[in-house]
Image 1 (cartoon, rainbow, N blue to C red):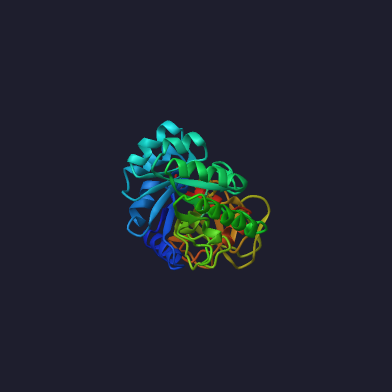
Image 2 (cartoon, rainbow, N blue to C red; image 1 turned 90 degrees about the vertical axis):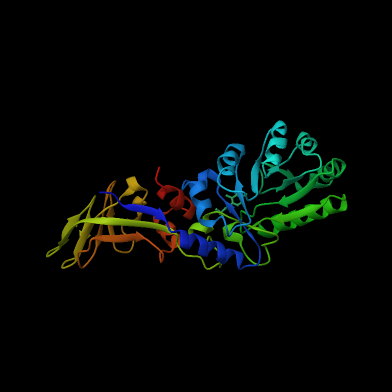
Length: 316
Ligand SMILES: *Cc1c(COP(=O)(O)O)cnc(C)c1O
């Protein structure tokens, strides 16, 4: 007996549409093999609705290339010698070195602006010089940054805009700009596309986009009992109130259910395979995570981030 853990394709699609309703196309971020759920599986559900995909590196690009014909954008740099092959297969590679620019002669590449593209970007103060090298090589750019902090949000956006202006001033064709992930998806920050990862699964991360949970965790019930006096249940000293029913479910932290959910809502305890919850009547199964689950609230209760909940529930 095992819990049914999966993704609801209709909910994934509704979430893509909810982000697109802000007025910018959605680039689905499917790094880390689609947040552990399988990039190919996610592509099959949403390919018709997204503008493009975003992956971390070249390995992820080739793995995804067989699943979609849409453009795939890379976050990290690749060796300059690999750029031509990537371009030939519809990738938009990221470039942060002069050798990279030379290898991409005449093509469109991505250039990330630090500070929030720190692993593969250029500093805003170097934008002018880098832009002149792009102009000399006939390279057009998609400029991007990554808002990662509420405190420095305005600063990151301002440095980004200064860099965009520097590229234009150097005569470089700026094909597009993007800087918002799930939590920063607003109409004004949408620019030319949104890069949405956790939001596909229904996490809000502070944004006001009306998404819903696409994760499904349905646990079979293995037993039910009524507590006619105060009794103890599960691990540690979990008291069951008098005259309440207890349902034992086959789903636990071994399945990715956060152990720290014990004590939240109706959950009494979470073990490796079994979870006990208060339930006044027996049933065949219980939906632990479904369409109406608030993933952000769930993450808060579990002392985790929504990203950790999403990747942790994927079946390995
Ligand atoms: C992971 C990542 C995203 C997506 O972030 P979510 O919070 O999952 O939407 C967007 N942009 C960059 C640069 C990333 O690394």
